[in-house]
Length: 111
Length: 115
Image 1 (tube, rainbow over the protein chains, first blue to last red):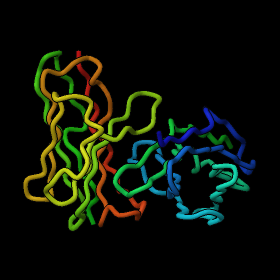
Image 2 (image 1 turned 120 degrees about the vertical axis):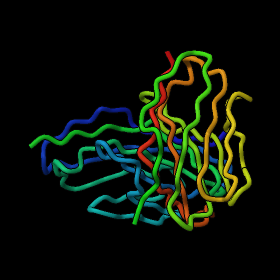
Image 3 (image 1 turned 30 degrees about the horizontal axis):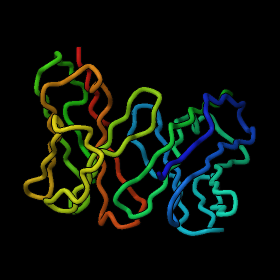
């Protein structure tokens, strides 16, 4: 079935460090791919998305490229800040009806 | 404007009791989703409404779970004969159309604890 596997956490980084959170997917068709973020005490919110192969989604300094050949959508940021501390979820959607989420990766950035 | 509102934020109940969880989506959003999130897991799909009708209820775990959206706006998730395994955070999300936009707007969730 359709699913998402993402890097387990928790991840702890120092401020200004480089971040990568791995995400791979399994899908029967050509999904759209997403990263959602949940800041402490808030609901999930869309961080970025890519709807077809080789698309790059970007927002708030985060980037992810839709790689069909490796079925991956890894999240990266060149220099993390304390305010990036949150839980990050990779997700896919084939029809817009169902979204399949990964288990989430908790990121803590220390000053 | 107001985001997705869920009530109650916390609900503690006893095994076997009936529970209702309410979701008030963003005004004008036709698509509404219910998800369940257990500790350490990602959100798990339960049901999707387009307007008043349940377009996809394949994620409901069994017939103790039921959801309605009678006027195409507010939705209620109903759980009968609650079990300890139903303890989780129940998330509601809405979307302008629900068709490949990817922009789900989530509420903060209702945390259900079944003792």
